[in-house]
Length: 367
Image 1 (cartoon, rainbow, N blue to C red):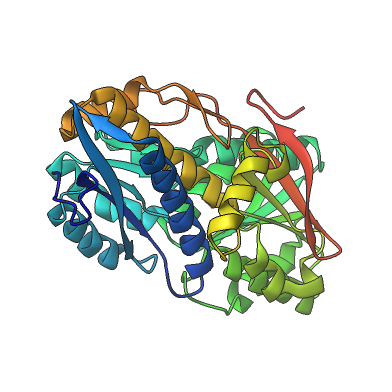
Image 2: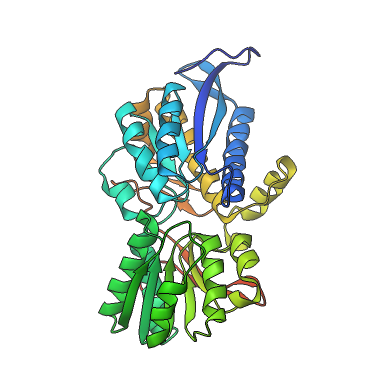
């Protein structure tokens, strides 16, 4: 796997990154990419000695456009580059499409953002994530709606993706178990800006809450449409919505929207202050929420390579299963399927066009 370093500073170990570097989600992808670069640069400065030989990590970043077909192509390219592991992909559709390619090559895949339960349920030993799965996300979202908001009726809309649809179904299922009436479940294209058809149907029942499973920019357009059609329902969106794209699309119509995001608020993450300082000194991109999870994913891969003391992919995967360390986002360790052992969440609300944390959830149930 190692390649000669023309600078003569040790052999090169390529590390893959895959995510959206263009399009509506390009800002998120660039922030994750830069966080991975930061982790690799820091590892190189400390020195990378494996089996007595000196190495340097080199990032090989690819734009998957948050598209499943492109993601599979990108995965095949990264495998041909003999990467020691891949940090990515961002959205569940892309990660699921690429996972079988990495699995066939025996290459570890650590996603900093994929939440679909299907991702780790495939049984691939080299699949990991530094973010919770949507089973827990859906459960806590529904519990918050029932126990904190007093919601009695709920409708869901999803974008037909593995993440969005799976999360909306999970929320609806848990909501029913908690005594909430689900008045309807609707699906739209993941690329549409037209929510009129489902909203006109939803308006007939006027539920207390509309849950949306989909991407941030769509959630912002949905918030505007709810206000335009004078629907009294409150909006709760899926994780990944916090950030500027939602606020820019929704404007003042986004006030009151809720979203449950993985991890602690950035300023409460244990390593946030020094991470933000180091990031700002090296990059001019905004620090997105998922940058911390990407940084921790890269740290996990670096630590596994060091502990394996080899560049052999199967040994790196084995060490990933044994890892225990404190990352920027919190404690990092994985169960047998590659999921986080102790996921954390924060509920946010838009107040005066700003995302404000309103509740921290550290496992258990929402009370």
